[in-house]
Length: 351
Image (tube, rainbow, N blue to C red; front, top):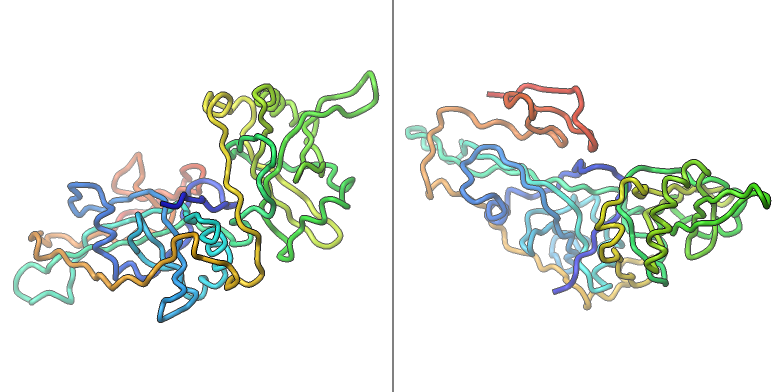
């Protein structure tokens, strides 16, 4: 079974910003993902979802199905699929399965269309699947993983790299045509300043070429971890991004600092990512045979009204918008989660 490749994303937190389409045709598959003993109340399930190209789809050659454990739960919007074709096909051509985090919000809804007008209206599954899907330009790194032993540290907070202007000859080579992209960057200890007053700072490299450094103050927050990993024979790597033009560019990094690193980061197994096949301008140029390519699954519009009878004494709650969840302090309210923390924004649940 091919391994998974978690797509990169500039977006922070666990906010799922993208609504897929077609869930109503795959209710049976979606219901199989809900907790055992689900009673019909509103429930959220968090998990990764696979993005599988369907080149033989009779309705759209660019179709990308959204799957869970190989079972289709919906699709990317028809307008968006071509923009994601290069990303998902490149990962599949590398013998891997592209995945993204997501959520299911499901509840039991009254099926008024099937009501006979006499008995209690039947119930059916209503579900919404949302993905944490960023920009396709930032979904895959522009460069290959480091060629030396390394570990990729977890993300934490964005830090701006300084002195990029001193390395424009190197940096501008990495600016993509779209003007934005994600990168593997590596962090290294180096000395700067005059002899006798030199300071230890963190040097930032792309493909082992210096492109800038962190400020002395910020460097001190990374150096203990960099030294510890270096003693283990590992280079410290982290997520980075580049934004620029033909004449200027800036780089940011995102990785935990020394005080945030737990034992799994400092002394656990190195975290590495597989290299992908080379980028191609034409998504149709990728050989998809090494990976998993989807075939269109038959419609499976689900109804379980015949399986059990449920009283319709109250209308079911509507689906909350993305990022609105049950308020931990007041079950009668929804509260907005901005991807990092609970906000002050609340809304009453419809009864």
